[in-house]
Length: 607
Image 1: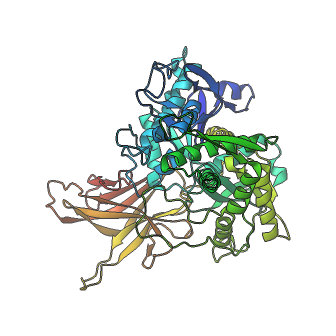
Image 2: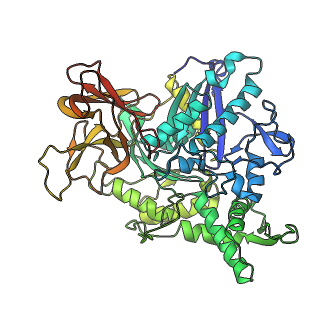
């Protein structure tokens, strides 16, 4: 943590990115309001205007896609790419040159997230960037915009010199978190701390109700944070506790990663419109459908933000020699939108419901691994049943309040549907909605508020590691023909371990292979909250899941021959940044240490 003049919160969102701030000078005068920084961006060719939101879209133009020099920004004549409003709008017309959902790709374990793969499935002659690079470019735009507006005459106000708090989904695993840090550092942001988005939403709510939140809650209450954004659905549970006679908050559960959000809804709308066109004798090819997908996203946002609209016109370029003559025109109606959103993504179900399984085709196209069941309500029922009504430490509890977050939860009809479903699940005491701020801005504001809490101003949520982490260790047993050697799960980071903590397993030695290739599985679990560091789980399949397996050859020292097994003790650090580091420390010589860093490409790991 820096002693910087500003505390900055950044929401690096799937759909929008936002930058919020507070200053030490303002706080010293008693002004604790959190401000949103305007972000200058290209809104039309040759036109730059400030906006509170930076749409998280990247347009990579070809030589004839935009007029020369029309993408200039106050701090760059022509960067060769454009992020923000114009990128989103022009990219909807040329989808093969539009990068979207980079945040979702950042947590996709099935691809090399450091390789230039986006725009996904675009022609070979189109320039591509990696999910990490796209994220870095959004952050670089935010940094350059801040520096242009705020720090032109004050070098000590440069964003790279401030205390920055960057949000990530609670469901992001150790690799996705570290890749997010890599993107931030590539953008020039070194003084960085990660914060989970549902926590940021709670910090924003606390900041908006500093003097009254204690009157709304009592000991034993459980807040369900329901965060449905552009790319992911995140559920968290936060309990109201009492410590030394004072109310406090403690996070007690985090949901699994669900690639389910606004992107899925936009795709469902596009399929419905395509079916309508096909029924009228106008089929679309894959290129046209991608453009329709982006247009449906824009139409959805207009219908949800402008209640007076009954429909929004859509146009899709034709594929003939005359694009204007071949343009296809249709519309998305409010009735279609509400039916698809409510019935498809928020259907009524019981508390005992589970996500519907789906038989997967053996060979499929590579792409984002969206959830096979789009029903947010069924995923929520599964989450609550697992964490509140099972056999664990929180059994028999029920949510008493709901805090909504994420752009999908902005419309009243969506929040009402979820509240109605929750009321049927808990008829004796229906959970009450906590009034939230602007859901587009809350996460960034909450991140800045958390920065002030870290400086001793306000209540800190007791949270720590959002899951238990394990390292796979090979059993010491004779080889048996046809039977693979069992791999046990050794807990190295227990659930809730506070940031800045280090765990050393000193009571047991392990053998580390150096000088030849070996694999190191990293595992995680959100339900085994009682496993202490050092706990060995033998039968872990189905509950503990693999995050990533790193394959590498650790370098031997001069005294080690290739293939040597050296005695080590394991040390895990959950850093202040919110990143996991694993060390193997030689039992007899602590100066000999090997770091296992699970942050590189899945196909070519090194340590």
